[in-house]
Image (cartoon, rainbow, N blue to C red):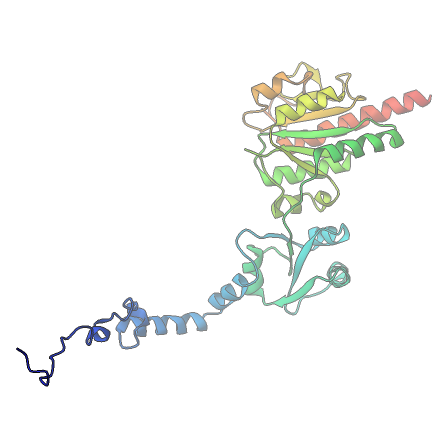
Length: 323
């Protein structure tokens, strides 16, 4: 029998559990101050801090992300501000040599409440992703595409006032943003009512397109549709006719007989032209007579000629009606 006064021997139990606990993951070598990798990282950071280009890159990356939309150049920025394009920030080069355009840019930016930030030349090159910014860069909000139904309704209402049928330009397979910008500019010059783009396999309104349009994108509605062929069918039902542009067209652009009607002019890419299904939905295929020394025209050049020829034919028809 065990003596009641005898002390019990307590087992180790959990007395040493705390000492067995882990201390978390092992820090990276570069984060351990005693490691040579840490010393190498400190030396690298010092070199980067002393490099003005690296410093400019770090400053610029705090302001503009890779996917942000920007406009560069004095004329495009001035046109954008005059048209009240939604923007967030204006960057001005340090010691910028000002002219009438830059003074108006700064004045308009101040009136609209934009943040105006000064940046050195290296930083501005980084923000603009180019050296050709002329000392000014405008950061814009993403382009807001117009609603097709709203644009059509507005175009039809305005058509009654100006006694000219609505005119739209549709691009099928045009993937170059600069071509899109040039088409927008031509369409605006000859009173088109809007540009129609498919969502897939097509250029979008980027800063590059905006610059080429010389600000015309500010007041020319651009519509993106899920399916171009379905949109053409819907507009057919509303009384629109469709002219497809192609080098082997049997009609001459501007002389198809549909120019005075509500109209859609469809252009394809310079290489493959209009898609087969889209081509089948056209009421007529028209061509632009050119020299045999040239195989084809750039899409934006063809668009400019087509909308000009249509506009001229409409003007001649109005004149004839008045006489």
